[in-house]
Each structure stands twice: as structure tokens, then as C-alpha cells.
Amino acid sequence: MLHTSSIELSKSALKTNLNFIRRLIGKKVRLSTVVKGNAYGHGIETLVPLLEELGVDHFAVFNAEEAEVVCRIKKKPDSRVMIMGMIENEDLPWAIEQDIEFFVFELDRLHAALSASQRIGKPARIHIEVETGMNRTGFGEESAEEVINLIQNHPEQFEVVGVCTHLAGAERVENYLRIQTQIARYHDQLALYQDAGIHPKYRHIACSAGVVRYPETHLDMVRVGILTYGFWPSSETLIDSIRRKSEGKPQGQERYRDPLKRVITWKSSVMSVKEVNMGEFIGYGTAFMAPKRMKIALVPVGYAYGFGRSLSNVGKVLIRNRAVQVVGFVNMNLVIINIKEVPEVQKGDEVILIGKQGKRTVSVSAFGEMSNQLNYELLTRLPLNLPRTVVD
Ligand SMILES: *Cc1c(COP(=O)(O)O)cnc(C)c1O
Image (cartoon, rainbow, N blue to C red):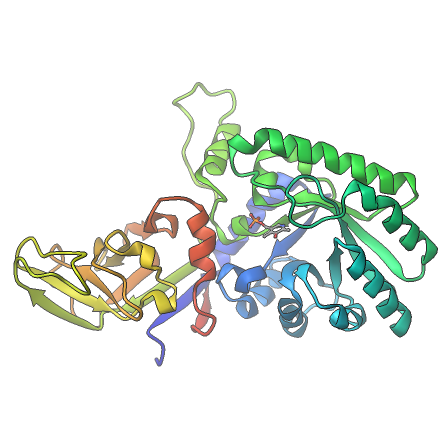
């Protein structure tokens, strides 16, 4: 093996998560699986065919490059691809040609889509994104008239597949009011389009947290990323989900069981083992001093490989079925771990960076437990070029 670490993806875990999502949204709501950021670090090229096998037929990506990858590797002709963010105007003819759907949130892109569609003689499949309070992308109410006119004047050029928006922090209870306002504004804006006779096939606003916490946001389609991979958008979302399931049971008697399963396992192996004397600093600088004579092991992953520097002195990995601590700073290509409790560790032993070994697990958020946002960040930092294999 040339690489210093590798990734395994569990098909059965993926199936469990998809079933969980499908149970929440019901049969009538279309599921778009979000595979941006290299499928949250899991590996888009491995995941898309796997997701297709499990019945997913709609893929949401951030940009044109990711859309190109999905188009190239998808096996089913009917699987749809939707760009939620960046595409250059000059690539719009290609997107239209390939039946790629894309968000439109400014007049410039709408005009460019019009001319691209006229040029190649095929309608642009657009999702009109409306601004509801995230203040990132989306047409404000003041633009509705112009958007509507342009679309109505060119019925051959546009297929309005969706009208959508994105929620600004549905995973946190502190954003409750803001989310309520967003939902209300969405419906106000949707009404403007519908009153003008524009009836999108899919009204969609929910991401993972919306799916779990705000059932009224399911509408016709949901865009789900993080849950698919077996992680929660926040611990609040998990707790909320458990509470909902335990409704009727008195507080304190909720059944704690995480219905999701982690899809990814990330592993490496011990490169070298050595002993360090009491009072010696380990690694760069003075981040860690050996409190007594101790044994350490070196693992050939570091921040260049997605093992974040924020895990210095706090990260944990699994070895010989034990959880052991990272000591000192995470280096570019190496981490040092404290093996005083497992002195039998040898060069070549398997090291689990994310996943399960024996009875123990390290989850991504257990890396630091500072915030679940870490899940998103750490996952997407996993290198593109690691070998990824599918296991059951
Ligand atoms: C990333 C993203 C999603 C998915 O978010 P999750 O929290 O991972 O489910 C949905 N919609 C848009 C516009 C996004 O950018």
C-alpha cells in the first residue's frame, strides 16, 4: 500500500441512514442527496454509484466540477444532478446539454441561462432560489417581478424545476425564530411565483436539520447531506430526534439510541514505536512533557492528510481495542500517540482514526467535541486521493 492511511465505506450503514431519512420524509417527498465537498470527504466517485444502488436518484452538488464528476460516474440515466452554487455563465450551455439542474439566484445567471438555452435549443432546468434571511444567495422579493417576466416571456427556454431557499442554522434551537421567519418568507415569495402561474415541481428548503426538526419544511423535496453519512448536524438535533421518538415517555426515560450509522472508517498503522524519558518534551516545542518514562507510537497521518492541528494533545485514536491520546502537536505528516496503557503495541498495528475497533469507537466529533461543526469540517478535509473501499 502506497498510502499512509485508507478509508472504508459501509454500504449497510448507508442503507440504514437512507432508511431513517426516508421514514422521516415519507414516500411522497423526493430525496436529493448532497454529495458536495467530495461527498463530505467520503469520496464522491465511490459513493455516487453506491447511493444509486440504494435507490438515490437525485444528487446535489456545489459546483460544475462536482456535477461533471457525478455525470461521468453515475450509472442510471435518470439520476438527476443539481448545482446549488457555482457555475460560470460560459459553462451553462454544457449544463443544459447534460440535463444538469442549477440554482439561479441572480439576474445575471438568469439572462445567461436564457441565451445559453436559446443557443442550444433546449430549456434550462432551473431552481429559483429566493432570499429568506440567510443573506447569502437568493432573489429578494423586489426581483420577483423581473424574474417572473423573463421566464414568462420565454416559456420554451425555462423549465422551473424548483423554487427553493436554504435555512440559516436549523440545527440550533437559538435560531428558531429566524427559521420561522425564513419559512414564512419562503411561502410569501413562492406565492408570488405561483400567482403568476409558475408552479415548480419541487418546492424545497430542508437540509438535514430541517428534515429532523421542522417537518413542515419537507414540502416536495429535501436536500440531505450530513445525515446520509451517519452524522448529526448538531447534538441538539440528535437529542431532538430521540425526544420525538420517546414522546409520551416521562423525561429521563427516553431511550437513547442513535438511529444513524457511521459510513466511514479511516485507518492507518503504527510507523514506529519508542520510549521517552521523564521530563522530556515530545515533538515540536513544549506542548507535551513526559510525566514519567513512557512509550509512544508514531502514526503517519497529520494535518496534511486531514488530521487537524486542532487535535493536538486532545485527539484520540484506537489501537489494540484501546482509546489512546494524541500527545503534542499534530505535525504535517505525523501524530504521536501515548501508548503507556498498551505497551505491547508494535510497528504495523492497525490504528483507527475514525471508526470502531473492538467495543470502542472514535467519532469525528469525539475528536474534539468542541462543536459538531467539526464533523463537516474534518470530514471534508480528508484527502481526495486516499484509497476508498466499500465493505458491507
Ligand atoms: C450543504 C447544503 C445542504 C445540506 O446540508 P446538511 O446539513 O449536510 O444536510 C442543503 N442545502 C444547501 C443549499 C447546502 O449548501
